[in-house]
Image (tube, rainbow, N blue to C red; front, side):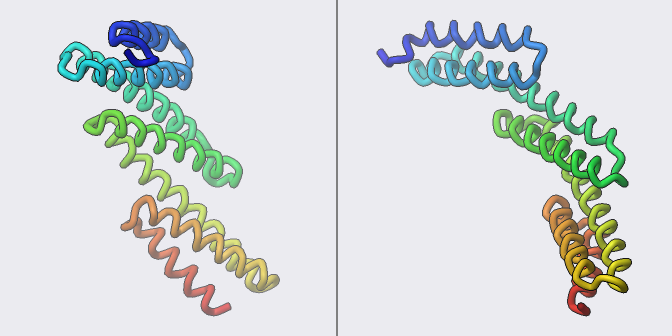
Length: 193
């Protein structure tokens, strides 16, 4: 016997954690409980690999875990959608929320690769991040163009920030047209300075 106990003991622990997760109002806490339940279910299955019941229980836990990640991602995405992207602080907050949403959609797919909610969510959030970053780049670019007349050092810094924002946008959506055009324009201004 392993230190963790018998497959039956591990299964009971996993089931208890799943029940607690179902009652848990906090999604992050429910995710923690489901992750722990999944470990017990995986151990129970490893001790008895031919047992179809253990495999089925593990898959149910994986599905529940993926759904909780999808729910948490949707909350972060909704929070980001409510931000005013013309305000620098709110734009940065929206970016952080979208990055958290993206991470949760990716975690859902790591557990259940065929999770279509997570696949669609990841694609949608990647586009939103690219749009937000391209917008940030355009704002920095306008600031740099204004500063170029009075403060060339600040202009160089702002063009660099714009370029970085466009490059981040392109990392999320490589064919993002506004980010491509902004990157080209920012590079052109940098080479003139």
